[in-house]
Length: 66
Image (cartoon, rainbow, N blue to C red; front, side, top):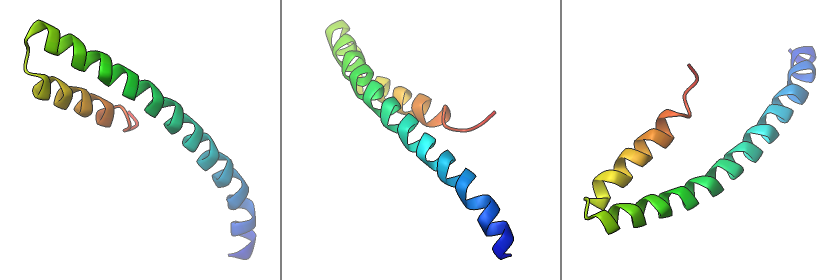
């Protein structure tokens, strides 16, 4: 068991760091995009809440591996 932990911890750490970086970048884009979608929907008179729920479902769905 100790040999396995020594072999597994460094790759898992690098994967976790990469995941954290990618999540932070994606979150920054999603805030800007959601704001743009909100303003576009409200200008056209559509139901903003329904549109943003679809956006949230899309962002949650893209997190799962295929």
